[in-house]
Image 1: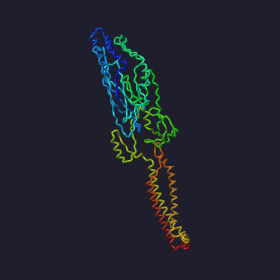
Image 2: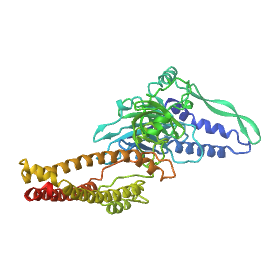
Image 3: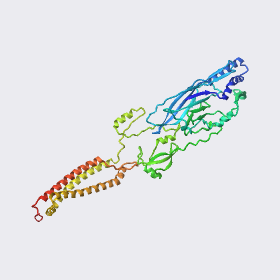
Image 4: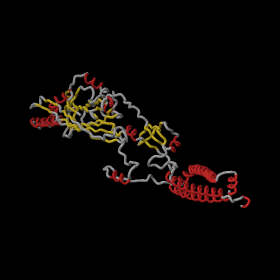
Length: 515
């Protein structure tokens, strides 16, 4: 960044008349004031004015940066440039006064995380003069050049060509002001004017110029570095993609109305209940009111739940897109006050590490919230284990009864030539096949009943409306244990059944008629 302090043509003319102006002011003093006292007072006023004109100027810059991933915005102090004091020279009687403007340069390297992307949302430039007694009738012009680069790659220029400022005209829009000033020869003179005093109004002197338009500040953001001219070193400047010009800084009203590109709709995700209540579906656009501002939004997805909400109506907003719409230094997305994170490692270690961060106030661990289905789940596991015990007991009893009841069948099959091993295997396959079909039918009907009843039952346990339905999931470990135990018990029963049938087939003394 570089800057200079200069006097324009009208300021130079006013500087030439400065001694006459202050000496004329002493004519307003009472007649009894001696001439040498009047001259001393005039000299003191001239010297004070020259000191004011030559004061150093400090130019401070601030960048508003937005995290491209999170949308969080923050202000970063840029370089602060101090322009060396201008030099004024004067002859003994102030008949000749010279002015040599000051200049200065400054730069600052800002370290940002290399693994994250950042966007510049706004740039603030504020030239400041130190306070001084009195005021100066000669106002210097401050010219500033500003460049921003990342790894030597310029960031300003074509990418900022459509940016605007709040207190300065765009360089192209200020052409009528430059044309008007070029149409005249700069002239400043002292004219009689009424001056208010404690005893009434008297005639004094004041500056009168032929300047056709008042001085204005301008900014050129179409190239790198930016070119900025401050007509008044006390006026700060904010430049950004959606910054509007204050009409007070365009006296002629020649600046064309800026029409910033309409912001892209902010992607949001809504809950099914909100979708049903508003008839919004994926791809629909609507206007969302946030912090008193209307924001165009588009439904990007319909999600079953929103983190942190248990109510049916919920909306999830993309913070990065929202922050891009608040891209000014005074209207930005601040750092969040609460962050949610899913942990893959040891929760205690993660909590300790997070608590050690200087910007973290409190850390809370959660198991994902209270499980509203836990009581029903435990009851179903008890029921499943009990059902397995009853099923195995019933199967054993039914198999024992079947072995005795179907004893004559074994003799008949033996008589027609069916081997004992084949009879045992056939009976085991018969019972096992029926049991397999029954198991599949039971699991299917049980899943259907759970799908119909679990969610209403678990919802009834909550006094508040619940935003999302209870999700049915398969606890693979528990089911594998039950299936393994059940399969082992069934296999043992079928083996005993096969062995019993085989023994019956080997008994050659059994006869149906002597049973």
